[in-house]
Image (cartoon, rainbow, N blue to C red; front, side, top):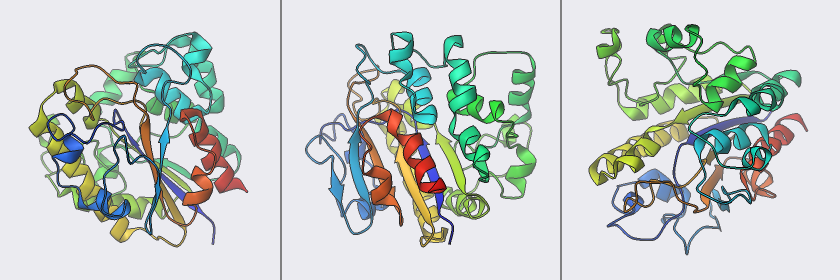
Length: 304
């Protein structure tokens, strides 16, 4: 049976203190995370583990560069395997600078896997407003979106969402009616996880991006942060229930810390959690120490 990989990219979560006053991971109800981690939740004194259901390692997001990690360079490092902040001499975000575009085009994970003959998919659905925005010539695009577009991989739209061949960035589709799609009514986030599992069954590699975590971190709003995390946990549970666990390895990774410390409005220099579950989890994490190791590990697993 051919291996498959699903990559959950969660923006802005680090490994913080075990402090429910500042860290929403210890305020939220997260049964799926705790199921994977043997009843625990990652924190500064629990950042490596191999449980019955998953493996956890801390991943360096600073990449040897001073200052606070940022999304533009951090995501570029994840999706290309290149030390993007070191290449340009600083952390940069939220969007990749022009200097990184050739690297993203040549080295991104979609392009590398397509070249190897693999079926790839970016699960996020975009509304018409986004396509209007990109057609206007904007260069303010995330590393994930750029990687997809530069690989010739069509971005998913409302029609894909209707047929359950895509997932809304907020998981529940709550905002789609107000964006002009009254037929796309809200769904439980668990159902969105099932939809992702069905999409993953059709591809060798599937990526889903969840950015509300970073937004919640910057808001410093504990109730919002708890909701965002509980929503994702339910989504993950639905996915885990429906995915073919005999062939699919799943990986959760972030680009920098933020949400784990609501006492500050900025990003942090904390390591980020990397959680893997499925048949290839140990091989995926065997040499994963920093953000540049994610894409090479996935490519190796899928092309060996």
